[in-house]
Image 1 (cartoon, rainbow, N blue to C red):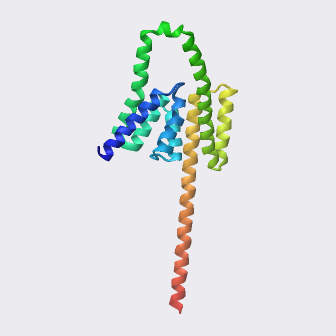
Image 2 (spheres, rainbow, N blue to C red):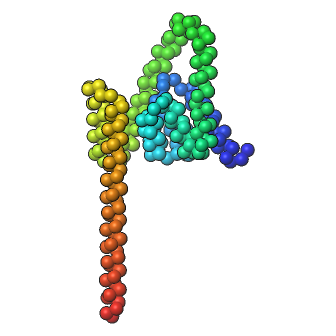
Image 3 (cartoon, one colour):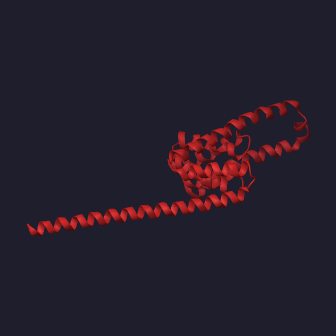
Length: 211
C-alpha cells in the first residue's frame, strides 16, 4: 500500500473507531481526535487542533462531523474530508438503525438505563477535559483579551441566558478585529526595523565615503 493510500486508510479507520466508541455528543470526540491526530499520529499541531475545534463549534451542524471534515481536509484535502465524514457518520447510522428496530425493549431495559447513567458520568469528565485543554491553550497565549472573553462568555451564557448565536458572532467580530490589529502592529514593527537598518546602512556608507 502506497503512502497516500495508507494515510487515507488511517484517516478512515481512525475516525470510524472514534465515532463507534464515542458516547455523549460531539464535544466528547474532540479530545479523542486530539489524542489521535496530535499526540499519536503527529499530523496536526496543538494550536491547529484548537483552531479547528473553534471553527467546528461555531459552524452549523454536528460538531463531530464538522471537526472530522476540517481534520480530514487539513491532513489530506478533499478526499481526506470525504473519508473522515464517512468514518464518522457510518457507526452512529448503523447503531441507531439497529436500536430503532427494538427501541421499546431497549428503552425499558433496566440494564441499559444503568449503563447510560454510568456513561453520563464519563461524558461529563471528558467534556471537563475539553474545557481544561482549551483553557490552557488560551492561557498559554499570555494575553488578557482571550481570558476576558472566556469569562464574559461564560457569565453571559450561565447567568444572563444570552443566545449562543449572538455570542459566537460577537466573539468572531472581536477575534477578527484583534487579528487585524496584531497584523497591523507587526507590519509597523517590521517596517520600522527595516527603516532603521536602512538608515544605519546609509550612515555606514557615508562614513566609508569620507574615509
